[in-house]
Image (cartoon, rainbow, N blue to C red; front, side, top):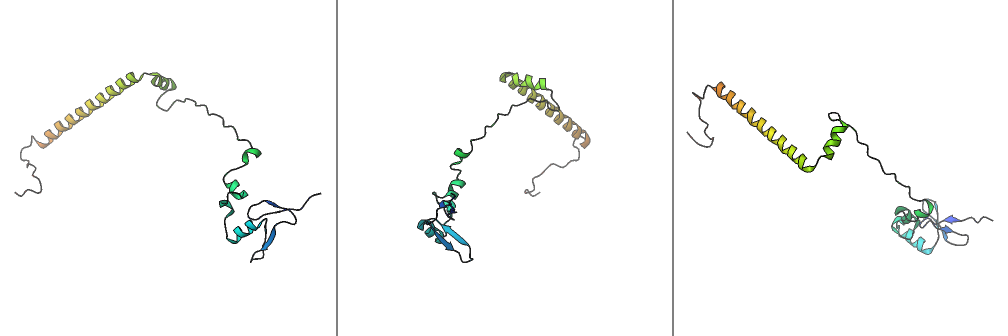
Length: 149
């Protein structure tokens, strides 16, 4: 024999025949409430999700899900080394295998080369600008703007 049960509107517990109360809202919707506690809290307009003992709170905070479904296992992703546009896979592996001291020495050498290149270009520019001006004859000397002549 199947017993017709209702669900409490606040706690979502089953209400068996002869228990609970039926509350009719102003809009005419029937609301089944399982206990005087649920009735009182409904009249106070309390949110079921904020009451720890209700099913809504348990659903929101993921309680009691372990019984129904076990957690899915996550596979560990395998990293695959791939070649980049400018560098082959072997070169990448060589750089990764190189010791930190060797790598630091290479970095220092590259920095020295870049600095030397910058100095060389700077010297060339100065030489060109000196020729273009005509060794500075007839040029005015720079005077700060705040100084009166």
